[in-house]
Length: 360
Image (cartoon, rainbow, N blue to C red; front, side):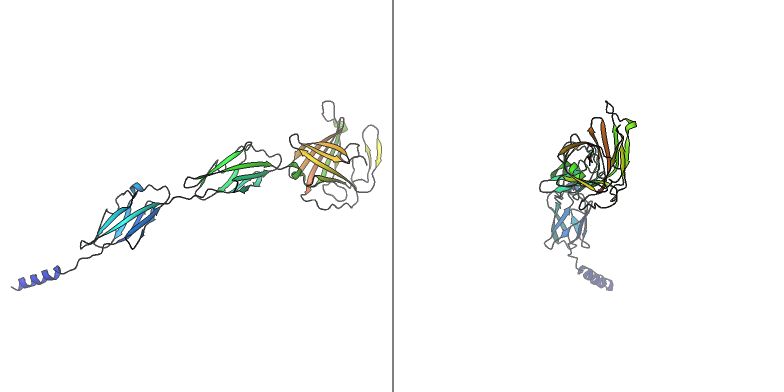
């Protein structure tokens, strides 16, 4: 009798234990891609996956209330092309339905060239975002057939032709930048060669002058070679050429106090006055045939340019039949402001009628 009473009491006690009614989704995420969803109070769950993600077979990892169950189950591949309902059933059988929506990030729309530069020569381009142009100003004489640009573009974008690839800019080149979302922008690269007048702008010092006669084939006669050396920019005895932006210039000669015999078969003796001589000129440059034209005291001289870089300048001038003057110049300054014309002159100075320095 006692046993039956105890059994009845235990049955009544256990039968009165209340079952859990918890039916919540506590965590909803994906591991590939690694994205955790946002769970709203309205039982709407939203996950944003990266651009390009295939949402037709995503595997959710779901944490739910203790003693509850969920359908569809956690860990099962699902197609999230459209919103998917997930039903959570509590221990006591009560249900909650969550709606899961997966959105795909539309991808970045950024597709700009942020920087475009060359290393050889070292030049930074100017980018016009409104016109979608990239302008590269190169020194005169630059070989443009295999330039290698270093290009920085928007994050997640790509560019074609690629950065670091040698490219022939003989003709116009278009660079296409493709954003992450597939939209594109075209940039036209404009190669401009620095005008020789711009390269010449500044003060140049004569380093060496050569004078010689040529045969009928134009070859130098070594026996007639005369070489004169100077210190470029020397204020006591140098010879400078000044080229200004407005295409005017001056020759400044400070090496005039020397007895000199020009070897022309006549043994003429010239006494150079002890003074600085300045001669003004106008100039222009013809790129196609590399000729420098200088109007010096109403006489037009034309010089063949055999070398022209940012810091060296060599010309030849046939100032009379079979007589050639060749000058080697070094840049002294980019910005000619004022020339100091004082100082003693100590160097030999050629004085041949028709030469760049003229007949003083």
